[in-house]
Image 1 (cartoon, rainbow, N blue to C red):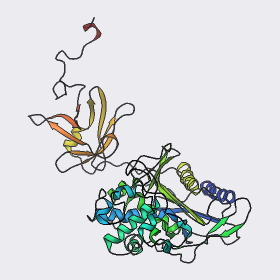
Image 2 (cartoon, rainbow, N blue to C red):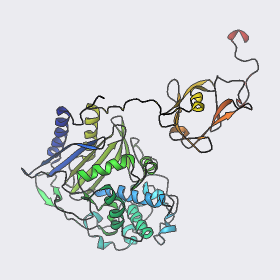
Image 3 (cartoon, helix red, strand yellow):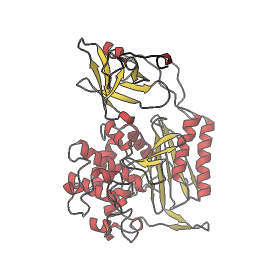
Image 4 (cartoon, rainbow, N blue to C red):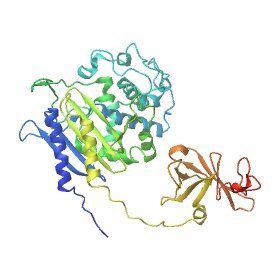
Length: 462
């Protein structure tokens, strides 16, 4: 057995430190702390501060702002998985009287409900939640900015509604449900709705002078599910591990994959970014990043993870504006993934081989286009074009002997093995497309039939 070190190389560590040091200095942040996780293990952390010998560490709490929304989304998915609601349910079914009850739970999760981006004045992030004691105070008079379901329009009040939905269905406060159903099972003991020492203080930095102004720290009341939480890099990397693969104690892998999938068209002109269910989904540096950013007066946060590289990064800072924390976190992922690519797991043969499935593998033709059907280590099938790009997909077996597409053009489509009268395989049927062992095999049920004279050369036409 050949082992490899789990520690980062010195050059990689220095590149990570240089990136956050540059961000703190150029962004004029009072302090900044960051950490990187690879294959479920924290492999690097670092911090910078304007006060010597007073830098934050991995146990220092910062306010994480809208990253709170991801926690709220997980709680809603749990309700769905328990059969207590459906994502296509109108809000009115479970939370009547809001005035926007026709929007669906799914639309609220993916910010496509068409609701306003912010609560009415005064600025909700910098004023006490007691100023908005009712959901009507959170929504205001102009509740609809766009037709529901038509476009992505980020809405913090939409997540206040989801928090109220959780409280109504569970019969407990959002904070209590959060503690019981996410924080305790995942061991996130340093994540809380109120600051717990040691924690950073929030500051504003003057745009044209190196001067500081303390920011107020308010309890957000009904808006808490959209941005209330405080956390640490250690806890957030633990949360990142959960977001990558799911955890049956909280939310299973299948539901987590739903959160990863884009749920609405992206904003006009922003074709690199999208939004799943409580998660941002972006393409950067040739890789897909999942996570969320957050900001409240005095604080900015970013968490990004690349499931393909199995690398996650968190950046926390205590300033209202300045360092581009989302870019910094993405750069930390890139630095590690590019400098020290993931070591593939050893290839191993199947434990058992199903003879009937093995007989299906190899080339199949859709018309004249060759495709390869392969048996995967997990017992599934993949169908890929033999040459160039095209429609390919992974398939999972169903109890009735059919297969269901998991991704791409054939996601949700059914693949069936069609047999002749003697029991031999005639062809594959994939969403009405016929795949044959030979191009336009006359012995198979090719739609439209096959010319009886068969294939011919140019001489047959001249």
